[in-house]
Length: 315
Image 1 (cartoon, rainbow, N blue to C red):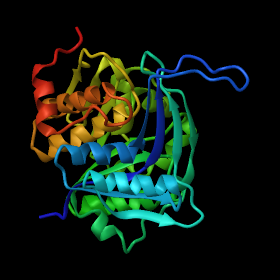
Image 2 (image 1 turned 180 degrees about the vertical axis):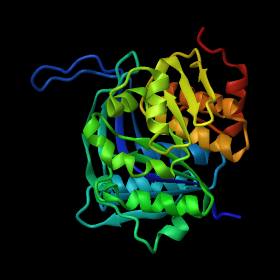
Image 3 (image 1 turned 45 degrees about the horizontal axis):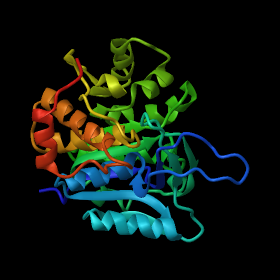
């Protein structure tokens, strides 16, 4: 049996979030808000904690600084039972951190410091343990400068050679980001970007054409997150379907796509069929949106499963 159910490698951040944000005060003024919280976020961090909350034995693979934010990230991961063996913690690094201001509609303008995400590196000696899992997730490909030069592809190739299911999410905004991402796609079972990121990479607008672009680059299946429009699944066997979003009151959209990735991994580990897996991922994302900060609305597996079964979808 693998050592882990889920390994989440990539972008881990310390977030400070305030809600609701409506204006920047002039000069040195103050605007009062109702809530302020801290969260471990990022494409890797949100997924790791959400998966652990829902019962997966999870390993974090990332980098943080030797600073107050890094200490807190490590403590918070440990609090949820996430194994931090793979988190590099070096002097001179700064922990990737964000100040996130949440508007009343749930949108989230942010100030971000890139930090240690660009510096950590999974050595060849680390790979056997890092891929000793049922599902391996690379979150934030395109933002991990040291790993994006080729080592992410090496790690994922090793995972596939071991029979591990692989998932990938990206941080991308333009076609220039495609080369760093293209090298991992032949080792990717489920490519799971937002529709905005996917279309920015390929320059296409149609959902089917966008999915086929990445299928032609080697992925087994595309699972495109569509925000309030749900999710779209398309695999190389020609299976396609749309899963509608749940009808919820949105508080904060921070980490929704990352929570979706965790929910999808949980569904895979539980052996759900693909349509149910996407619906469970949608439920995880929706619950995430009901709280302030990444994975705040996610409680546990039973709660998410009940939400999936009982909550109405849009339309």
